[in-house]
Image (cartoon, rainbow over all chains, first blue to last red; front, top):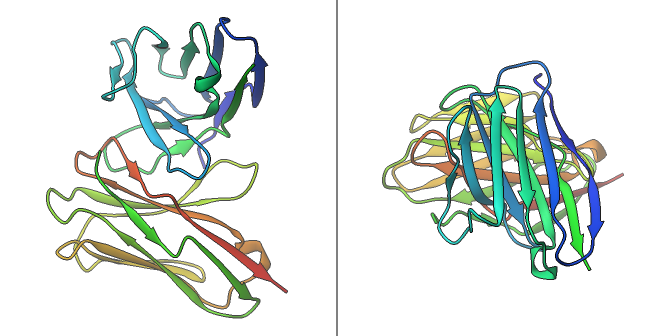
Length: 115
Length: 111
């Protein structure tokens, strides 16, 4: 099956710093990539949807200036958490698809801890 | 945000038992229902994408049914094995793209 690689798997950073998370589709072209966030004991919550070459669409309540998403190619999307604060500590996971109603292929997630 | 509920929250069965979980979702504006299996420290893996009312899908010992009119889907595992231990997620979409996930059912199968 298709593989999505996500790095890093975990990161610890100081409050106020920025953290970049990469999501790569290794063996297919991802027309659309999705970024989700999961807090403990909660469901995966969609943060934003990005299509290659265009601006990401953010879900209500997600600050676009804080969570910068870049989808510059059909195989790479990045999420940058700018000026991270402890409340941004969460599990972030990306997924990719080629078309509507296709199953999603997920990265393995990134556990972010902001001190 | 579209409400997707899964039950039970967790389940502990013995090897060889058959089990099933429920996913309920909004019955209006249905587009598709996804099931994923998520093992600890791995990526969620797609099991099924279901689009038609009455649809039934099967993959080995795992099968799923779909009722879009009443807004529920069942996932069945026949003869559970320890390697089936994982969290099973369902996700609903009314657009074909963005998925709304339930919290998952955590299954533990002990020998």
